[in-house]
Amino acid sequence: MEDKNKENNTNETMEWIRSIIIAIAVAIFIKTFIFNSTYVLGNSMYPTLYEKDRLFSIKVPLYFKGPSRGDVVVLKAPDSNKKDYIKRVIGVAGDTVEIIDGKVYLNGELLKEDYIEENSYTLVYDKDTWLVPEGEVFVLGDNRGEGASKDSRYFGCVSIDSIKGITGFRYFPINKRFGKIK
Image 1 (cartoon, one colour):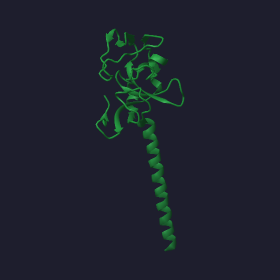
Image 2 (cartoon, one colour; image 1 turned 45 degrees about the horizontal axis):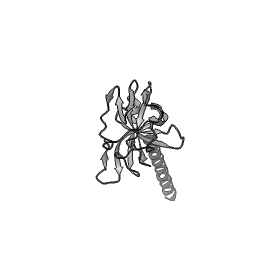
Image 3 (cartoon, helix red, strand yellow; image 1 turned 30 degrees about the vertical axis):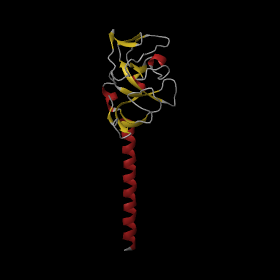
Image 4 (cartoon, rainbow, N blue to C red; image 1 turned 90 degrees about the vertical axis):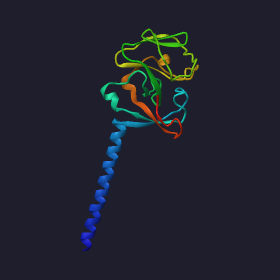
């Protein structure tokens, strides 16, 4: 009888270990290939995002079509191996982005940007026109104040391969800003 109890305990322990290993494998798979959680540091995406907001970023669309104009994306910082940036996609491959008198133009047309503060002035640094190459995107922070955002005005177009996910949902704080990101 004692041997049977010992055998049952061993089987139960093995089942627990197997379940834990499967759960860890599923979690790693989900985090690697499906979605991730992101924490906002800084104010480069104000007024859309605030410091300490927590977001979900989804990876699945990147496997099929890449980001679209207007998407808010998480990308590996082109100027630092230890950071990620959150920016808005303004231009995709083949687009021409121009900044003239503080306004953003996409393919010769004034870009309607209802996500930035009214009367925002988009500064230029050393360049005011970009042609977005194949496999890259042009990104800007929603906060266009001087020095508020390191984006494509600073480091140029970014590779689609550097994009880690497309954000679309703020899950913290749970207040009037909770939910879908515009």
